[in-house]
Length: 57
Image (cartoon, rainbow, N blue to C red):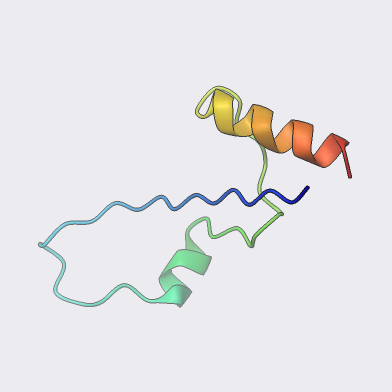
C-alpha cells in the first residue's frame, strides 16, 4: 500500500511590497520533503500517521 500525506503551511498578508521567493522560505525554516521533524504537540494526528507509515517501510 502506498500513502501520500502532504502539508502546506503559509502565512500571508497584503502589506508586503515584494513577492516571497523560495530563497525567503529557505532562509526561514524551509524543510525538504521527508526531512522535517515530527511535532507531536502541534500536529498530533499528522505526526502519528507519519510515524506509523515510517515504521512499516
